[in-house]
Length: 384
Ligand SMILES: *Cc1c(COP(=O)(O)O)cnc(C)c1O
Image (tube, rainbow, N blue to C red; front, side, top):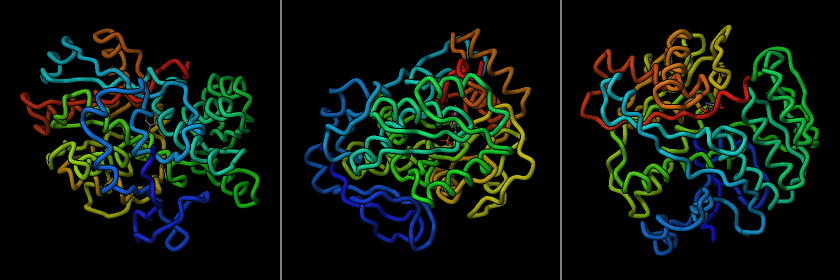
């Protein structure tokens, strides 16, 4: 059973009704976040109850937004492995290095986590047609979960997106639309259709419940590491739902009495060819200026403007974290190393975290004795 009570604006804190479909805050235009009855949840959620149960992320149902279990649309997402890579750890110089491998999710990336919660909640609220702008993985995940629940999906992809993704979306029965430009251009088309009432827009953070699915990565790390969070979490950042979600998860777990006040340092990794968050973090800015002429082969990181920028930057700063940009060459080299030393055919975004931790070790941002979790957010397969 879920303890969801309402939605709250992440900026102006205005309260919104969770019983009707919502996108951005009607008052200030910023993302909405789900809130729960934490007092009541405290009695129901214990360490013990989260150490057992379903083998997917719906184990954390009490802190997820679906009120009636029959609307849960699941393909067995989440509860992904945490892999040690001894040879890699030795080479990097961080013996306690672990990879949370999200490539084992349905459709090969952690986008499944967000789409299982977004589609399930929207189906509960009566929505039957979805659309999303995507660099690839979000589209494939939406297409799969829409198919699973018998709903329609339209996927808007930048024209240079690898064709394998489009074929996968079509196989799930989704409509595929190519758009000239970047994901921000695709987003405009989706917003126009949503404004005409034709589809429900499930873009990153314009839809409030994808981040709820993503936050379960934070819950899982706690459960899988015996309730001791690592010193450092390294995460590839595009729209930022993973960072924002995990940061929210840690706060919720502390309120529930599951963990103490200690937090990992959150490290955001971006590509040198598109690093708006890195630039804003270094400048001490509250918001990130849009990145001009964004270029990187890590498609999921080619996000020139993130609507949740202020929430990402908040999480990085509150955690005493950092933001680093890595080169395309460093990403490619890291991808090879993950394959040869760990047995993971990682996406470039996932490989970027290894490149990021290497840069941090070089500049003293991470020390040898610290425990570090890297996120391999997806598989390379969908891009082939
Ligand atoms: C979407 C995506 C990202 C970026 O994730 P955010 O949580 O939106 O920052 C990273 N890696 C992969 C493989 C992705 O598909």
